[in-house]
Length: 493
Image 1 (tube, rainbow, N blue to C red):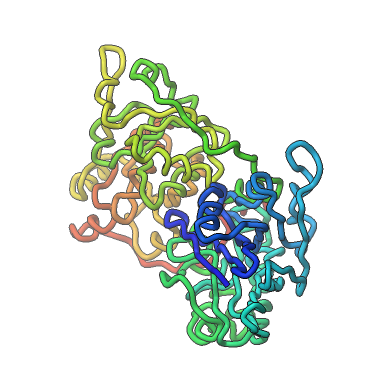
Image 2 (image 1 turned 90 degrees about the horizontal axis):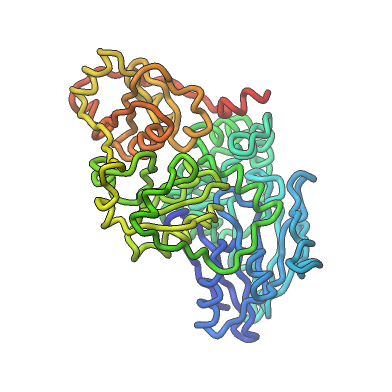
């Protein structure tokens, strides 16, 4: 048997190419949308992808299963578990008419890729339809599974969060029942031998859990002994409290990903090919009508940028920040290093931001300035100057997570996680200039640029709350924080 994990560092997402070397056939489990990577890897190892499989309807990236079905005719294996609201709706919508070759899977259904058996195990909790795949290599003479592709059920050191249908997709009243379903599902792990390897869909940095480990794989036995979330499952009430507390606010784009992956991702005709802009064409861009995304480092952006542009650095948070501040329908213009254009395009389409129409060379940004077109800067101050501004009437916006805010914060600050800011603008103080901060100044930089675009007067706190504390400025907290849905979810109750 052949297995390779294909890991996306930006989204902390793992897909698995699994092949039978005897027959040359292979399947990809939980692929992302730019599927050429999987096809090329299979070809390089003398394999042919014949199938694609999904553990669930994903919230954090656009699935590549439909793309593989269109491009190479891969058979699709997906869950038929869960309620009517979470059924795949694109399987009979093949381009040109007809249905994709597919099989809907119930608990204990199986399929073969060459001599390798994949058995579906219904594992609800993270989502109602979630399944995992027990993998047995009969070609090697094995009669028991080698591994389980757990999707967003079991991670290394954590379990998939059960609150997303409420906190991200807005299904009020869902997260406690989902946590109880997950508790029952955890009990089913006792049927799986300790030696079975755990191949999860995410690692450290993913927003699909709160404390995922950085080790890529594990075993059922190890996780049963040392995974804090599994060890918390001594009683249902203790487990529900543990699994729901401290979960980070989900990025804003998660709700759209759920919809896209259920209804069906748009089929790509290859990657988008944005055209290069001249400086005259850049001057004609209206940042109020599209997303002008400046990917340069913060210090360069802060000192000089085009009014109305967003600061979204091409780092490990690029997808998350893009999905939090850019609407899926918006056209996108990138200010970028040309050598990183392909990287940025791939990252954006993975979170459903497809309308990348043009780009401008970041090294030439100074040419934008003329008598009619200004370059602007964003104010940034240290703690002492920030404290003076607050005393003079500036309001404080804390864009850290709620759990961070509860551990200690600036008196009177309003707390909105930066990944949810665009959906909670009605809570941002409107009639006073703002001091914006996070832990170290990185997330608040993204938020400051967005707020400037929306017409707010902002100053970023250099060094963030860490610098504020280190300078001896007054803080409030810590305070207790309990799990609760987002304010927009509460409003739906």
